[in-house]
Amino acid sequence: MALKAAIVPVTPFQQNCTLLFDETTKSGVVIDPGGDLNRIQEAITQVGMKVEGILLTHGHIDHAAGADELREKLGVKITGPHLADKFLLDGLEAQAKQFNFPGVRNVTPDRWLSEGDDVTVAGVPFQVLHCPGHSPGSVVFVNVDAGIAIVGDVLFQGSIGRTDFPYGDTQALITGVRSKLFPLGDDIVFICGHGPASTFGDERRTNPFVGENA
Image 1 (cartoon, rainbow, N blue to C red):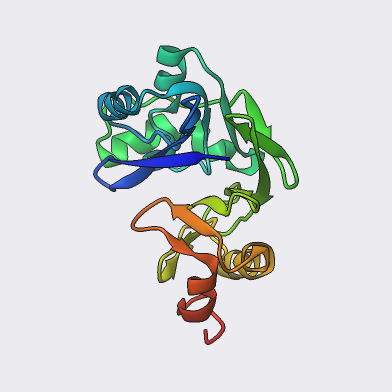
Image 2: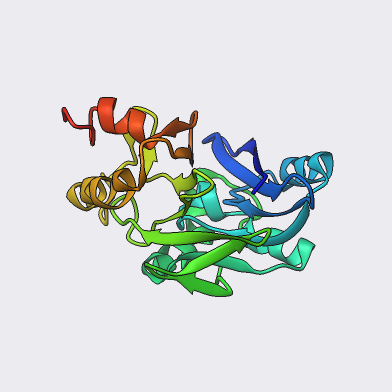
């Protein structure tokens, strides 16, 4: 499994849109295209990726605002997140007025995801874990054998996703990280929605919110 990730920072929130693809076949997916589609499409061209689909980790505007337009441009399908984020995806256009995001469309995925589902990236299966707290429908994509996880805004290097929204749930988020992510193995590298990557082991040992000394 020769999967490679290219990170494209997008939107004023500097969200990590991730291109995850097979180095040999160049088939892959776009994860969380939150905006700046010209920049995303330039990156796709630069790496030579053949886009087979779009994955969404959750429904916040900086992760999903460009998904519907990109689906139309590329002729692919959108997968994820969990149905519990439907209200966020239905409200993207309204959110856009608050944050002055141009050209935003509401999004209806072609497939909603649930705990235990699988998605494939260039033929490589990824397990879907439902990890609410930052948003009700946040999901994580993980392949233990490949040692990689895409966690959205569930977990960051040295931090966790915000839970101060009306629908946020700090305890659910902490419980999900500790019970679902950390047991998968210390060596798993995760790409998060903002900031640098890390490993589950580093966060288990040192993260002040979910680590063993928290």
